Image (cartoon, rainbow, N blue to C red; front, side, top):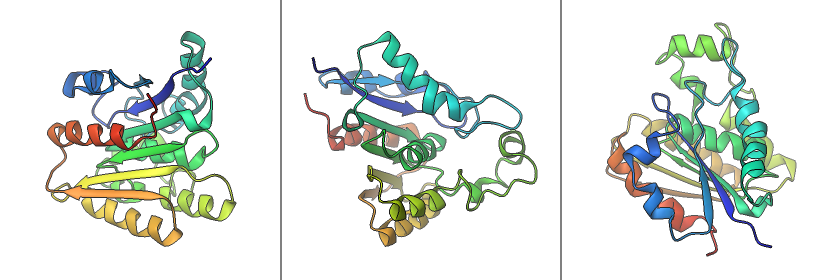
Amino acid sequence: MVYPMMLTLLHGLSDDHSTWVRRTSIERYAASKNVAIIMPAVNRSFYANMVHGGDYWTFISEELPAAARSYFRLSDRREDNFVAGLSMGGYGAFKLALRCPDRYAAAASLSGALDIETRRDTFPQDYANIFGIDSKLKGSEHDLFHLASELAASGEPRPMLFQACGTEDFLYKDNQQFLGHARELGLDLVYEEEPGSHEWGYWDMKIQRVLQWLPIFQ
């Protein structure tokens, strides 16, 4: 029996598990595809096991996939599992794919907060709660640039990556830096940009493109 594929769809810093359904037409876009979309809530965790808070990395990487497959007949094959997200969720999507390349065939980041260190001064209280006051993130398990370099050198399977960011987005520079790093490493990355800012009209448009890009077979 062929079980449905699974797309884990991640929210941003100020949102929760309901926001994709409330702010886009994701249900309608996915209706004709053989894919189950799982939308978890992780609060303001940056998809990490927090110093002062929940173990959200363990939840998103271990507990959620197991729970979803216990409720529904979903495929556990790597080639049938994908992850995508926006802003903090774009960071989380690449974090999952780069740290767990044996489990995810593809990952998509929309307007992703991809350079974790540059966001420290923007959200100092969140960072203290998540990582600790004196945390050093560069070169750690939270640093996407470091994770990408490790994956490129590891010989492990490389997930396909999709990255998009509007040219007026405050995270545009972060996205350009990650794009250059990924291309230097030779990762399989599709990049798209067009006029747009950090807002739901842009993400509603781009999630349709993500669903077209993903290797979802109907």
